[in-house]
Image (cartoon, rainbow, N blue to C red; front, side, top):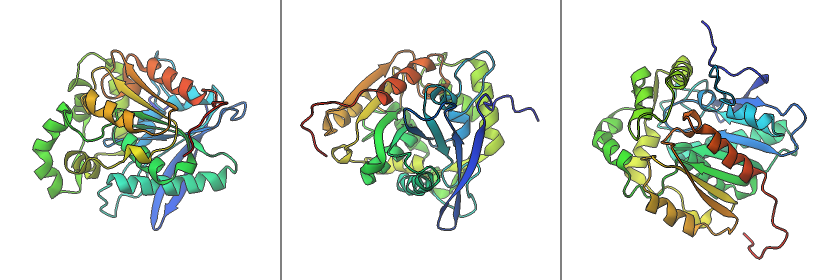
Length: 310
């Protein structure tokens, strides 16, 4: 089978971290000239494993791989499949709740620190429930997160049209551990908020890569986002943080995110609205805006004068 959807300009290396009896798949791509700008850890969301999101190839669409984009700009890069997803352990019946994702990030960063000594603390980018996982981890392990980017994030869920619709299916999610996915499901991600924000060829490549790795996914993050928000406390996130919100994203209402942003204690913080973008930022037509904002934040000079102390 052709795997034209897998980025291959920069050679990747697979790794395996342990979380007790669980095998966690990690994927690494390294900066050809050395990691002069540090290391980025990419954190995936509810409905797919990591490589389709962060290391995708789409013919005629440069920089479709966020990992390769950052490697070419002097960063080493990693992503991981959370338990229950992709190539990581799937046979334990995990719910894959947000807190369990933070556990996985703990194990993954343990491994990265041992494998690449001196590589931390890490820039971290999480999208959708991956933003919640990354935020929960940053709250738990502030010393490991140099700069935090939260994309398609949600706090309390108040005013979210996507979660309002999703709650109607909560009884079904509570009955089973996993839900099936197919090409129609992947396409629905791009049609629920504002159709037209992504190219068909990108959606097709994204779906092919997702479905190579999974035909079902855990329900835990959906349950958390429907039933258990908030799962993070902004007052306890001390890393420099940027909130990235697509203009049309339905996962969180703007007032919900602004309240979250206001409560972040570190004054080294930014809030960006990304025009013409719905939910899956890196697969949108305007994906270069997302990459630019991330890169700018991760390379921002550290303040010489500051009074804030975590």
